[in-house]
Image (cartoon, rainbow, N blue to C red; front, side):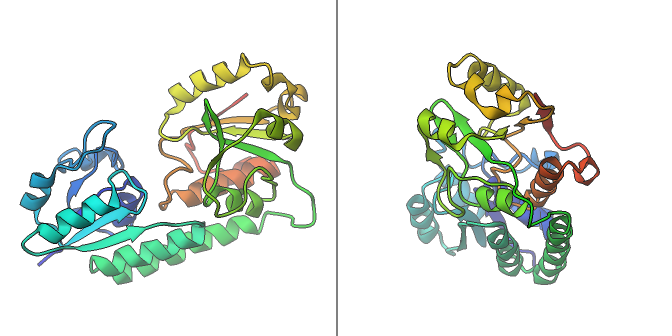
Length: 280
């Protein structure tokens, strides 16, 4: 008998699909929107408040709940509701700090849902793609300073897995350390960092919204003072779909890394086809 799985985290849903577990998914959060054919799967959360539909969760009777300590739904709420069910499900809480943690999470999800062999095969493929991209990075050439924006008002720079990806791709990200949480930064600190490249990838925003955020940045007093703007080199500023790329620690983080390597090292042929990016 197949496992019954509820995912309250978009990246966890993508990991589940990656290990061939689409047939196991019986419930999801409203933010779990990939792949596109999940519309038939009941949603346990709705809107910005992300309140958990506890009665629906009980009705779905999951064997496994995929979530995160700082996910869409409070971890204590998930634990409380799960414990109250007739057959309490196993809770798998994910909290990756690097792309290697994501590879480990893929194995954890596979083991939890009975698809360990599939997870192992997928992990080997994803790791191979990562290391193949690394081969194109010259570690002896100083790379550009990158400003990676996860929010624009207030201004927040990327954390968790993103700084280490930037560094592995051959660039620098001095405004935040690898593994540290995303953080708000002062404009003075941004100007002091003197970024040669800028990525605008606000969490949860698609490209249309990112264009609007970019336009708002261009109207600020500090934006024209950035080397990336003053030098006016082609493709120095990248606008990326922040709803689906970089901000979800799932299998497509490898796509994001391949794009980073291509962009930083001027190797367009390495970029994944159809990667959601526009340049300024």
